[in-house]
Image (cartoon, rainbow, N blue to C red; front, side):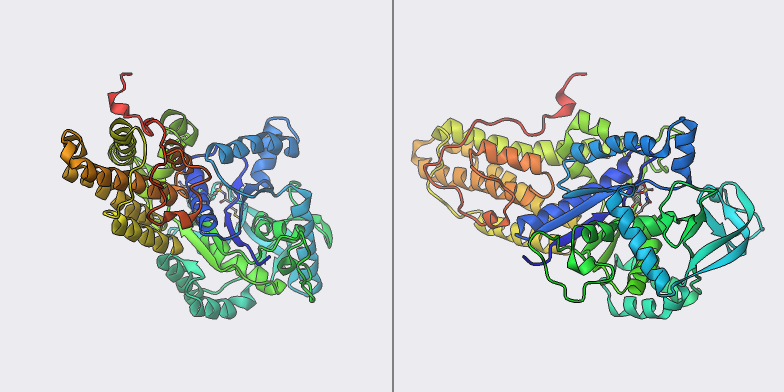
Length: 521
Ligand code: MSP
């Protein structure tokens, strides 16, 4: 078996409640994973949790729990999120798992043995909140520390450093030569700008165990644990490595043979993550892999951040969108549809309840839902639910929409893929207005014309189910069920016109998206 298409999300900090931002990223990754699967690729989709660090240790202590018990409790909530979002992830990594810890330690040992680390005493500033060392460059112009650093203290301590700076020129040339490595273009330019204008320092990769016990011990100096980012980034590699991936062995296997059951995923095809952590992924991570002699991921794909009503989401002010409650009220697919349709991967977005409701009513209820409902309804009413002879009046529209959707999906342009799909929804709804099947039904002389119209409508719905599967799989499966079709709509080859066979009997119409503005509260 060949290498699988490997997509990851950032691993979320375990000590926070899942919100819209986390859910958004997971849905995007799921759409990409499902689209690839539908198109016949073998996919490995990984998501998970980042569990080490000072904040977790402190929060656990505050609750009087040991850190592992504390993480285990929260992990249940995060795993529930993957279920509620309908994610098709193949694995769920937690950085406290032995499979991860062992690979991190093996990587640390190897880099240490090859002279990539050194120990040095430090005397300077430290942000407790961000668990990071600061230099005078991080100060505000007036010499004060920005509020985002929280309490900044003076610290004297010896630590281990990774010789990251020496790879700056290599990384700059690599990113210049590989335009697809950091996407979108605006983020790529930011990273290039940074690498061209600033000197990349070495990276502190340890914290003394006496100060921070909740981390992975350095195998060559057990008085220290690994800095959280060094640990966290390696999750993408440790999962395939632990599953025997020949491209992720430490040291890399010289005679790489894929054994029967080993996972063949590395290097990742897409690391999906938010704009705030691009530097870790596009600078630290490739340098770590380069030092290790491991192949680099193909693409770091950065999405923007959501605000709510034009403001930063914040638990303290209550200004948050809770994906669990939106999904309970409106259904999973309404949530999945809105976040992908509203915001392209790249820019920042703004959630407003009004815009959510208006897309729900116009595009889902009146657009897609109404199209399916009236198509299936009329076929039942006028032809006892039996599909008439095939007709190709909307075939070119459906095929153009399928081609356009596939093109957009190939470029991870998920928003425009939905626009392409809705061109067919709108075309088919317009076709109803133009052909007026309810009038044709009154005139027996128009029976053949009515057959044509009905075929084009239900066949458009069938094609739409296939195109929609990566985005709103539950709805797509409901469409297949109402058309009484066997199997899954998750196979792109079914998006060609003419799949519905004359004589096939469809099921009963059931509304896909009940109109909420008509429901009395
Ligand atoms: N644990 C690190 C990532 C390590 S990856 C090796 C982390 N965790 S996080 O929980 O803070 O964020 C997880 C992801 O959610 C990040 O990609 C982040 O950008 C994303 N988002 C967090 N808030 C967001 C919004 N308001 N909007 C969109 N995405 C946001 O960083």
